[in-house]
Image 1 (cartoon, one colour):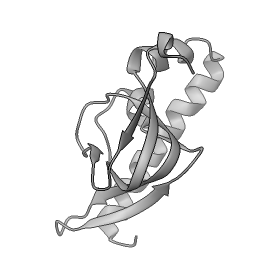
Image 2 (image 1 turned 135 degrees about the vertical axis):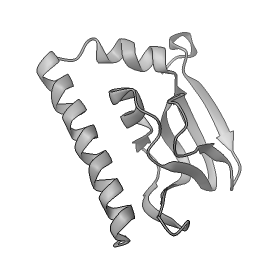
Image 3 (image 1 turned 180 degrees about the vertical axis):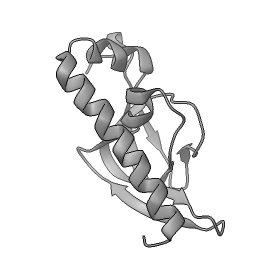
Image 4 (image 1 turned 60 degrees about the vertical axis):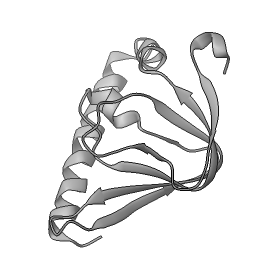
Length: 125
């Protein structure tokens, strides 16, 4: 991953909020080290952890796949070094994907959004 593609490697301390529910998409992230917690807001105002992302994993792609606001909040819970992939670079890569696979990914994003919303409303997570 080169900086010429617009990718940036950054280190974030514990507690850094990378994005909040409802924010516009600003990047996709690849975790090189550390941990990031993904949470959703419950109707009672509390937060539920729906995932912990670690080394080698990516997050933040759904908002760029379906061009919708962030469905969750991402916060560093153990100092993390992340590769930040800007929207332009992500979209350029998506143009190289088979159109059928692109449609499958978009449908999966839609279903995951629906499931996350149902879980938050039902408070079962």
